[in-house]
Length: 225
Image (cartoon, rainbow, N blue to C red; front, side, top):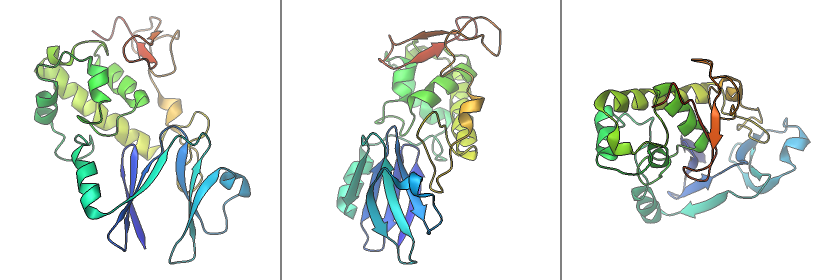
């Protein structure tokens, strides 16, 4: 028997043995459940297959093979989990908790959001989106945020992740959920992938840079300060 739960960028399966299967899918990894009705093409990149008690098959598919799959006993998993920061969708991720994380930090706020030791599971897309929605420049030192900005960032990050989950994730090319369906959140993106296009809030042109963390960062110079 497996029971899985999601920690944003991790998929964790509780096994009946007491061990845990920990999947970090990265860019193109996905778990697919096959009850015999999945189109064969969806399984062409399957690299691992598990037989479930009810006769279905659980596949780990990864086009670029950048993800990892690990089996951890309880002690190993406890050590592993101890290295991760708070998850944004956990009730303990309060404004006060985020305020403590940013306090005194000289790190760019976008880099802090993506630091898995501080906040678990926030990827580049959702860091871009939440900072645009909160009106905060991604390059600002995290420690310079005032209380109202920390509160806005916390709320927008939670809202962005919740809306993305409701839309089954963000698909540009390869992402699929466990039923083999593509995510629909790409159509709702306000910042990520829109460099050079008009800001949907003020109308000026968004600019794109890779200077903050080597990843694509899209900023509105008028709305984000």
